[in-house]
Amino acid sequence: MSDHQGCADYVEYVEQMIKHRSQGRESLEGKRVAISGSGNVATHAAIKVIQLGSMVISLSDSKSSLIATSEEASIGLDAVRQVMEIKAKRRQMPGTRPWKHVNRVDVVLPCATQNELSGEEAQVLIEAGCKYVAEGSNMGCTAEAAALFESHRKSHHHDNAVWFAPGKAANAGGRGCQWTRAISELLA
Image (tube, rainbow, N blue to C red; front, side):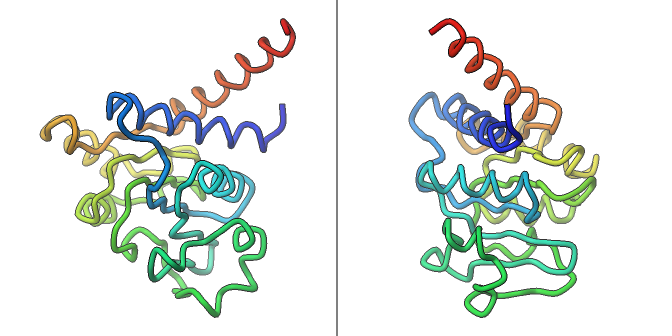
Protein backbone atom coordinates (compact mmCIF):
# COMPACT_ATOMS: atom_id res chain seq x y z
CA MET A 1 0.00 0.00 0.00
CA SER A 2 1.55 3.26 -1.14
CA ASP A 3 1.55 6.66 0.54
CA HIS A 4 -0.45 7.86 -2.46
CA GLN A 5 -3.21 5.37 -1.64
CA GLY A 6 -3.10 6.37 2.04
CA CYS A 7 -3.74 9.99 1.06
CA ALA A 8 -6.60 8.92 -1.19
CA ASP A 9 -8.08 6.99 1.72
CA TYR A 10 -7.66 10.01 4.03
CA VAL A 11 -9.78 11.96 1.54
CA GLU A 12 -12.25 9.04 1.40
CA TYR A 13 -12.60 9.41 5.18
CA VAL A 14 -13.50 13.08 4.66
CA GLU A 15 -15.98 12.07 1.94
CA GLN A 16 -17.67 9.63 4.33
CA MET A 17 -17.71 12.28 7.08
CA ILE A 18 -19.56 14.66 4.74
CA LYS A 19 -22.02 11.96 3.64
CA HIS A 20 -22.69 10.97 7.26
CA ARG A 21 -23.25 14.53 8.45
CA SER A 22 -25.53 15.35 5.51
CA GLN A 23 -27.34 12.00 5.65
CA GLY A 24 -26.21 11.27 2.11
CA ARG A 25 -27.33 14.59 0.61
CA GLU A 26 -23.78 15.96 0.13
CA SER A 27 -20.34 14.78 -0.92
CA LEU A 28 -17.02 16.43 -1.70
CA GLU A 29 -18.30 17.30 -5.18
CA GLY A 30 -18.48 21.07 -5.64
CA LYS A 31 -16.87 21.86 -2.27
CA ARG A 32 -14.16 24.51 -1.86
CA VAL A 33 -11.21 22.80 -0.14
CA ALA A 34 -8.38 24.68 1.59
CA ILE A 35 -5.23 22.56 1.91
CA SER A 36 -2.02 23.50 3.69
CA GLY A 37 1.29 22.07 2.64
CA SER A 38 2.63 21.07 -0.76
CA GLY A 39 4.38 17.84 0.17
CA ASN A 40 3.30 14.24 -0.32
CA VAL A 41 0.12 14.27 1.79
CA ALA A 42 -1.06 17.69 0.58
CA THR A 43 -0.47 17.10 -3.14
CA HIS A 44 -2.00 13.62 -3.18
CA ALA A 45 -4.95 14.89 -1.11
CA ALA A 46 -5.35 17.76 -3.60
CA ILE A 47 -5.31 15.39 -6.57
CA LYS A 48 -7.93 13.15 -4.95
CA VAL A 49 -10.32 15.97 -3.98
CA ILE A 50 -10.05 17.36 -7.53
CA GLN A 51 -10.86 13.90 -8.91
CA LEU A 52 -13.95 13.88 -6.67
CA GLY A 53 -15.12 17.20 -8.12
CA SER A 54 -13.89 19.64 -5.48
CA MET A 55 -12.07 22.94 -6.01
CA VAL A 56 -8.67 23.31 -4.30
CA ILE A 57 -8.40 26.92 -3.14
CA SER A 58 -5.03 26.82 -1.35
CA LEU A 59 -1.67 25.09 -1.07
CA SER A 60 1.31 26.32 0.93
CA ASP A 61 4.89 25.71 1.93
CA SER A 62 7.06 26.96 4.76
CA LYS A 63 7.64 30.29 3.00
CA SER A 64 4.22 31.25 1.64
CA SER A 65 0.65 30.39 0.75
CA LEU A 66 -0.82 30.07 -2.71
CA ILE A 67 -4.47 31.09 -2.62
CA ALA A 68 -7.00 31.09 -5.45
CA THR A 69 -8.56 34.54 -5.69
CA SER A 70 -11.79 33.13 -7.17
CA GLU A 71 -13.45 29.79 -7.87
CA GLU A 72 -12.43 30.14 -11.52
CA ALA A 73 -8.80 30.33 -10.38
CA SER A 74 -9.00 27.17 -8.24
CA ILE A 75 -5.86 25.05 -8.25
CA GLY A 76 -6.34 22.19 -10.76
CA LEU A 77 -4.46 18.95 -11.35
CA ASP A 78 -1.82 20.50 -13.60
CA ALA A 79 -1.33 23.30 -11.09
CA VAL A 80 -0.89 20.85 -8.23
CA ARG A 81 1.84 19.14 -10.22
CA GLN A 82 3.45 22.44 -11.28
CA VAL A 83 2.81 24.83 -8.40
CA MET A 84 5.85 26.97 -9.12
CA GLU A 85 4.72 27.74 -12.68
CA ILE A 86 1.35 29.17 -11.68
CA LYS A 87 2.31 31.55 -8.89
CA ALA A 88 1.91 34.51 -11.24
CA LYS A 89 -1.82 33.68 -11.57
CA ARG A 90 -2.41 33.23 -7.85
CA ARG A 91 -1.87 35.42 -4.86
CA GLN A 92 1.39 34.41 -3.17
CA MET A 93 1.50 35.61 0.40
CA PRO A 94 5.00 35.30 1.90
CA GLY A 95 5.17 34.21 5.52
CA THR A 96 1.49 33.29 5.81
CA ARG A 97 -0.68 30.24 6.19
CA PRO A 98 -3.81 30.09 4.05
CA TRP A 99 -6.41 29.97 6.81
CA LYS A 100 -7.07 33.71 7.27
CA HIS A 101 -7.04 34.47 3.55
CA VAL A 102 -9.70 32.20 2.05
CA ASN A 103 -12.97 34.05 1.55
CA ARG A 104 -15.32 31.08 1.42
CA VAL A 105 -14.41 27.51 2.29
CA ASP A 106 -16.31 24.26 2.88
CA VAL A 107 -13.53 21.80 3.78
CA VAL A 108 -10.17 22.42 5.48
CA LEU A 109 -7.34 19.85 5.30
CA PRO A 110 -4.32 20.91 7.37
CA CYS A 111 -1.56 18.71 5.91
CA ALA A 112 1.63 20.65 6.62
CA THR A 113 2.78 20.45 10.23
CA GLN A 114 1.83 20.29 13.91
CA ASN A 115 -0.13 23.21 15.40
CA GLU A 116 -0.44 25.00 12.06
CA LEU A 117 -4.08 26.06 12.56
CA SER A 118 -4.66 28.32 15.59
CA GLY A 119 -7.82 29.20 17.48
CA GLU A 120 -7.90 32.62 15.85
CA GLU A 121 -7.60 31.00 12.41
CA ALA A 122 -10.29 28.45 13.33
CA GLN A 123 -12.69 31.31 14.09
CA VAL A 124 -11.93 32.93 10.71
CA LEU A 125 -12.60 29.60 8.97
CA ILE A 126 -15.92 29.14 10.79
CA GLU A 127 -16.92 32.64 9.69
CA ALA A 128 -15.87 31.73 6.11
CA GLY A 129 -18.41 28.89 6.10
CA CYS A 130 -16.18 25.92 6.90
CA LYS A 131 -18.17 22.76 7.70
CA TYR A 132 -15.47 20.06 7.75
CA VAL A 133 -11.93 19.97 9.14
CA ALA A 134 -9.81 16.80 8.89
CA GLU A 135 -6.16 16.80 9.92
CA GLY A 136 -3.79 15.18 7.45
CA SER A 137 -0.82 16.20 9.56
CA ASN A 138 -0.38 14.98 13.13
CA MET A 139 -2.05 17.48 15.46
CA GLY A 140 -2.44 20.04 12.68
CA CYS A 141 -4.78 22.12 14.85
CA THR A 142 -3.82 23.68 18.15
CA ALA A 143 -5.80 22.51 21.18
CA GLU A 144 -7.62 25.86 21.09
CA ALA A 145 -8.64 25.37 17.44
CA ALA A 146 -9.82 21.80 18.05
CA ALA A 147 -11.83 22.95 21.08
CA LEU A 148 -13.39 25.76 19.04
CA PHE A 149 -14.46 23.37 16.26
CA GLU A 150 -15.89 20.92 18.81
CA SER A 151 -17.69 23.70 20.70
CA HIS A 152 -19.19 24.92 17.42
CA ARG A 153 -20.41 21.40 16.61
CA LYS A 154 -22.06 21.04 20.01
CA SER A 155 -23.72 24.47 19.96
CA HIS A 156 -25.09 24.46 16.40
CA HIS A 157 -27.78 22.51 14.62
CA HIS A 158 -26.52 19.35 12.91
CA ASP A 159 -26.61 20.91 9.41
CA ASN A 160 -24.79 24.10 10.45
CA ALA A 161 -22.11 22.60 12.68
CA VAL A 162 -18.41 22.24 11.91
CA TRP A 163 -17.31 18.60 11.97
CA PHE A 164 -13.73 17.99 13.08
CA ALA A 165 -11.64 14.84 12.51
CA PRO A 166 -8.37 14.74 14.45
CA GLY A 167 -5.38 13.35 12.55
CA LYS A 168 -5.41 10.03 14.39
CA ALA A 169 -9.07 9.42 13.43
CA ALA A 170 -8.80 10.69 9.86
CA ASN A 171 -5.60 8.75 9.17
CA ALA A 172 -6.84 5.61 10.94
CA GLY A 173 -9.98 5.82 8.80
CA GLY A 174 -7.77 6.06 5.75
CA ARG A 175 -5.74 3.05 6.84
CA GLY A 176 -8.97 1.14 7.50
CA CYS A 177 -10.06 1.82 3.92
CA GLN A 178 -6.67 0.54 2.70
CA TRP A 179 -6.95 -2.72 4.62
CA THR A 180 -10.54 -3.28 3.50
CA ARG A 181 -9.51 -2.74 -0.11
CA ALA A 182 -6.48 -5.04 0.25
CA ILE A 183 -8.57 -7.84 1.78
CA SER A 184 -11.22 -7.44 -0.92
CA GLU A 185 -8.54 -7.75 -3.60
CA LEU A 186 -7.13 -10.89 -1.94
CA LEU A 187 -10.57 -12.49 -1.81
CA ALA A 188 -11.45 -11.58 -5.39
